[in-house]
Figure 1 (spheres, rainbow, N blue to C red):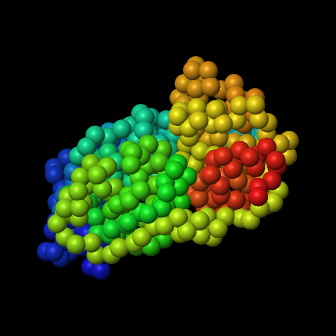
Figure 2: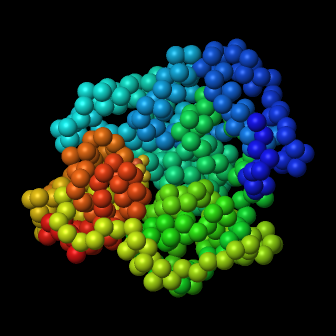
Figure 3: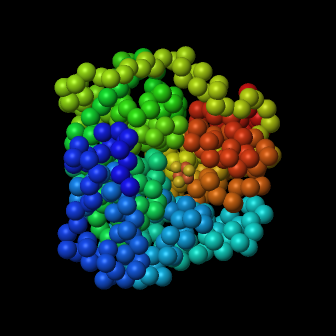
Length: 426
Ligand code: F3S
């Protein structure tokens, strides 16, 4: 069905002509007709439905994909449906984490059904031809699109990064649609695949001090609350250096969790915003927002639990990078985690290996923190901490864990470490 009320900026070029079917090439028609098996047919049906909804004019090839595999029943069912119908990925996707079953089964009282679902997930994604990276920051290493490349990325922290920071073009895909793109090798052309839909519409004047990734994340959450359907353009009043990849990662992750923001610009920094004219396409901003230090402080207050005893510290949502591990190692030297606290750092296996080879793991392990690869915070392996309070540097971590019954104080990294040592957060 065509969505007549959809925002023009989300639509393909033929939107103004009214409700149209997506024009398919011969190979795409053959997929839709089932000539490549019913798994590929289901995938193409889904993309045609999506294209029709957003009034796409045609399908375009994608050169990279990333699937936010969640290890939850719906996603795994969809992948099994495609594989049972003979589907295999034409553009192999990297994958998000589920959880490291062997390593973490003992941490919580995980049921056989939960373990079984994880094994089913690993097995079926292997059979469909995915690249099993189990990491939620593929855009930093392992699956890095180039400027202008048309891709299909799901994962809320990855999509804004590939669009805004790398200048690649992806819509805000779900795990289901991204897998369909991986199988067929195409995506419906609408939304952010068009240059004109990528322009900014809201000016965000940042007067707040952005000292570390934490501040960027809090700003992302704050702006995400107000941005609605706009594309924000950040003008940094007091920031005089280039942001780090981690700072940009935190910004996008939180923008796209409190809001639905797959694209943003930073004036003079991100590739499609060298100046105001380029960022806004020569049109005046339709909305404006100012971000001050007091807004970010109030935001932390609103999101965070108050002080008190804690049972855990969780870092790595999105996954900690190698540079963050080094930073952590330097900060915890000579300190010790309180016996009542479990300190977890979720990261990628390659960041762990690199940190080990480079001699940075010793300080982290002596401190008492555990580095965990291949794992997301939104999984059953953490249930032993539910009902208690943890500390995290990530509002996104708080948001997903709270739905599972674990509350969080949100603090910058230095305060997370301090809380871990004292066994309580002030
Ligand atoms: Fe990664 Fe899971 Fe957070 S996929 S960004 S650890 S919710």
